[in-house]
Image 1 (cartoon, rainbow, N blue to C red):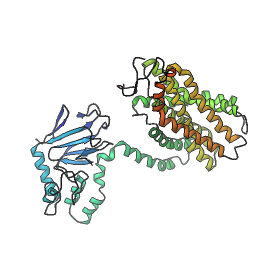
Image 2 (cartoon, rainbow, N blue to C red; image 1 turned 90 degrees about the vertical axis):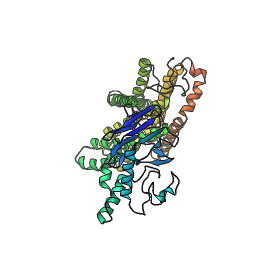
Image 3 (spheres, one colour; image 1 turned 45 degrees about the vertical axis):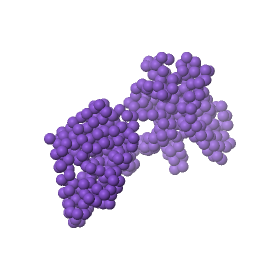
Image 4 (cartoon, rainbow, N blue to C red; image 1 turned 180 degrees about the vertical axis):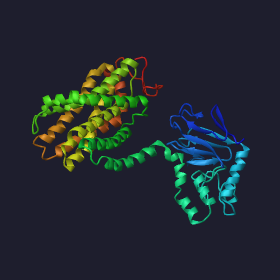
Length: 463
């Protein structure tokens, strides 16, 4: 039997030909590695005619002798580090028949004195873990690591033009390559094709439909940028569920709350009344974006005694703002048949502006949820600051400065500055609050170094 023994800590698994096994953080994997740096499905093991094939599926990488590898055959015992050079170690031990068969296949793939692979005199002259002339695999030269299947098949097929094309354009190998079926690569492929497909499908569609499609196409890019800036931590099923509830709530609130409010209180175009723009437009829209976030934060606290990290609420609030901008641009502005500059502003800028202001509100909502002694003042401040900025923004476009445009740019720049400031220093601000009695009271949040719960980070079950 060509068995493969895999060992990690006190776990040991034995695989037999015909089995396909995964290693990673996901429960139910053949071997579970709990390190948070490891992907849910980090490695895949499968039996091939050449022997046991190890394939890296993890985004953080797999390392052998300190060098990153993508896939290689296991011919002799080897220890692999997951996610980092100093990451958790997993040992693979193929039995002797598998090692002999893999060695024979390697020699058949590179016959003659020009062969350069493990076990040949040329390769033995180089220390393990270093590159040697003629190496054709991404794995470091080591016992049991040699060319990937597509390369080996190309060399075995001969030196004619067809064989050369199979090496240079390995379509068949790509179609069966698990690395190309990972979700980030599939998402990129779909994202690249979406505009082309939309242009064909939506030829006779209304402007509202086209506005929805193209605004929703831009929004995920901003969402990724916000996630990178805020660093709220991993996004789990619960967070995705909260985001879905926020979007559904806004879909209801905009026609029920925002539109009637603005219809009653929004000043006419050209009005120079700053306060009317703040309470007639800014406050209406910022409350609409903040209300679902605030309600959900309160629900989790009261129903489950759960507090999410402030940065997570800030990120979820930016998603609320993004959707509000998409909804507004798609249903109100794009159907008006805007000129190209106005369309550009509404599709590319509207969602960003709303997300910036909503993110600031989300930061204060998170603080108010976690530190109840000043909860209502924090929540009020979180809505007031974005409402004033929003009102200033609309006032600058409708007042005597509207024809200039630069005051609008200044307000936008200040909004970006404010958002980036809170995104980069959220943890530091919370640490200061944690040490200040006026905020702390009886709801002091323990340091984030304490054990985490499945619901959030830095929680105090006792409060």
